[in-house]
Amino acid sequence: MSLDAIRTSERLSAFAHIVDASIEVLGEISAVHRTQDDRLVALQYLSAQIMNSASAALSVLLSGYYQQSSLLQRHMIEVGFLLDYLRTNPDRLKAWLTSYAGFSPPGFGTGKLIGRLDQRDHTPGGGRKQTYEMLSNVGAHPTKVAWRTIMSEGYRMVGPFFNPQHLEYVLSEMSRNLPYFALVAVCAFQREAPALSTACDAFRTELRAWLQRCYGGFRILLSYDDLLTEYSTKLWGRRRSVRNVRKPGRRA
Image (cartoon, rainbow, N blue to C red; front, side, top):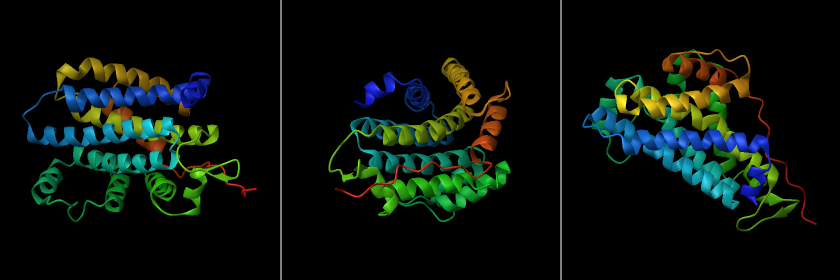
C-alpha cells in the first residue's frame, strides 16, 4: 500500500526520488570507491553508516513501521553531523580515530557537534537542534508524540500498518535531511576521487532540481562547496515550522 501511495502521488514520488538518489551516491562513495587513505576510509565508513541507516529507515517505513523509521533517521543525522564536522576538521578526525575505544570520545557528542556546526556555518537559528530533538521525541523516546506514530484512526496499532499521513510525514523528513548529508559526503570525496565525478555530478543535478522545488529562488551554483553552504543556510539557518504527526484520537 505504501508503494502504491507513492506511485500515485507526485509529492510522495518526489520525496522518494531524492531519497533514492541520495542513497545511490552514498553507496558509490562508501562501497564502490577504493582508497588506502586512512582519513578517507574513515569518512567512507561514516558514509556507509548513513546509507545503511537511511536504507533501513526507508525499508521499515514502507513496511508500515513509522516510529522505527524515525529512530533510524535519528541515527542517520547523528552520524551525518559527525561526518560534516570531521570533513572540515581533519585534525579532529585524527583525534577521534586515536581516542576511539568503543564509545564516542569526549567532545564528539551530538549536542557539541551541533553547536560547532552552527558556529562554522553561521546558522544560529536552531534548525539542527530542533530536527534532532524532534526525531528523538518521535522515534527514540517514550513520549506522547511517539505514540502518535503507532496510532491510526484512534486505535493503537500493534505491528505494521498503513497510514497515509504518517507515511508522508516520515518520508518528507527523510527527503529533507538525507540529501544534505549525501552532499556532505560528495564534497568530501569529489576532489579526492576523480572516478566518482560522474556519480557526483549526476547527484548534484538531481539535488539542484530538488532544492529549487523545495525552496524556490535557489541560486544556480557551480561549486559543490558553495551549494553545500547555501543548502546549510536554507536547511539549518532558521527554526522550522514543524508539522507534527497527526494527534491520536481516543480509541472507541
